Length: 549
Image (tube, rainbow, N blue to C red; front, side, top):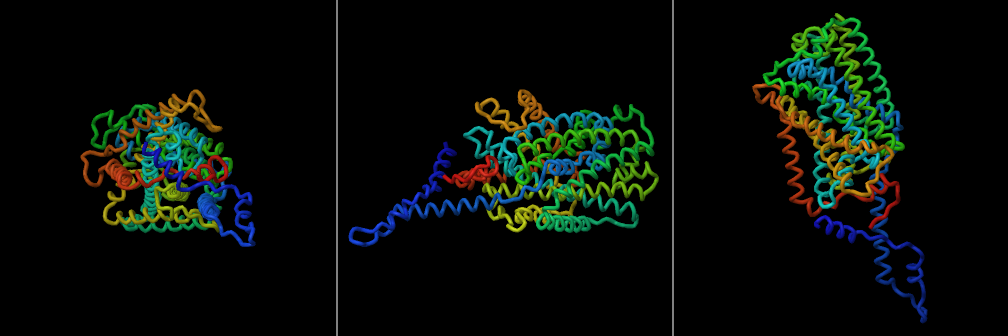
């Protein structure tokens, strides 16, 4: 009822200007019988003011969606493929599975994760085909949620998704900086890594790539295309070198060997915590959707790129896991090293220089992922600001470069400020980074849950060009079940006993961000937030003209 009343008030605020058919001009200019001139009537003045307001509002909306469609299908596909970089994630985050669940958690867990991620991506791809728009999850939620609750659910979804993506940007930047430090430490044993070094690396990287997103965005589709080719080429190089030169483990070791070196002695808990390593490699596939408004034929290109990115990365990730497990040598030696993947490459090649060259390839990919993270996070920031979640000031599009420059720098500045926490304690910065997986999975649960609800309750649900047909509902339900199950384990600490350094802060940080959104809602947004900008949806999704009313 409250939403309905607010919608009626909004409709009264901006009225449609009558079509200019010359009536107002003739009414003003017709002379009296005595030769005098009528002053403009009240109706004429009101019509003129309304027309001016309509044009002003229309110009504002057009200015907020004025971006260039730079990406073709191939470019957005490689953008998404590189952004996920699943096999690289498997190689970089081995430690968690070696201490929880052992090799079998990786070799079997990856199968579970790929099946779940395919269901997730297929579900979101179907929604992306319906509404390919930068707001993604919160726009789909608004479209599919129960009418009486849609404004509140959309508000919560918008903030959860935005916080998760800013956290993801922080995590990618931190990973890239740590990788660079690991390469330096391997080649210069006397180098002593300091936490403030990490912060400076993050600063330099974010500023440089922020400027690229601001002044040279036109080149980013080509950079991501080349990075995608490198992503595939490096996979072939890693597999070939490790298979040809690495030592050998038995199939029993790969598929049956457990491990509980983390303090979790319950095998079931330990295995599920080990499952999180492959899970991290399949988070953020919605990055391509946030670029939708800059993609040609987005209703077809974006959903296809999302789904096939997960499928191809799933094959690569499974292959690299089996390759590493069969050829990695001693687990103990890998765990002692600053970077397990560098140690594994050293053992296989017998050369620090060769291992460094291999991992430098991963560093290039990670830099490309960071570049793409800034792009996707900025587009979500831009969308959320033009829909009234964030201040409208951030929805500004630079006319010369057709880029939302203020939205580019907001998440960058936030991450830079938070990275200062590294100087005092790496655990403090890690606490914010931990939000990304939990926040994104929560956003998937809300969106897919609304889709399931709509399948049962919306009689005229219109699908896009990419649809699963009769398989849609069972795939949605499986995706929902998988996402909920993994979400249970995401807040668990990786090691026991728990202290300030190894505590998993994802749940407290997620709770704090959710509490912020709830408080904001009840204190202000419940009465003042008008909901999504319908004219943006009309221009971007429906391809129609303005109809301000």
